[in-house]
Length: 193
Image 1 (cartoon, rainbow, N blue to C red):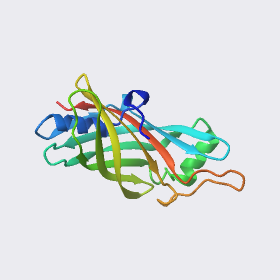
Image 2: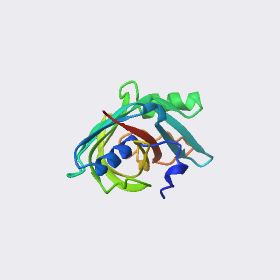
Image 3: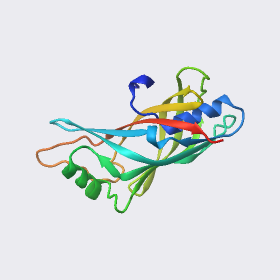
């Protein structure tokens, strides 16, 4: 279930780009404001739920509202995963993400569907490739976007089926975790002038 945009602590950069593109009849370019963008994750287990965050490295987006074609990327530092437990984070980096070998997690959009209103919150679908652990996976994300003072705020939630995508499940004999990680992204996109 998607929460209202104001309830998120992050905005997704890709969403913002989508908004801008639908407001103009030509290709637009946007840059992610990494300082205002956050990527969080949630992994449930039988005893408690693990919450953590990753750091954004960079992001840019180009969007043609006529065709819906999009390009660019949003790059996350795979080594930056922080759950507040250094032992768990070391295991995540070494055994699950193998972040010494696969140091970036990247989303590359290729098309955006939906109209963005010049005011208020709009819903769009962003299709592209989510690259993690050395492999690309086709994905479509539902995003909420909102124009604010010449920028776009974007938010989304989606699941990463990490075990299905070739990563190790960290479960042990006594500790069982979900086979999917919930990702929440809140981003701010700024127009490239």
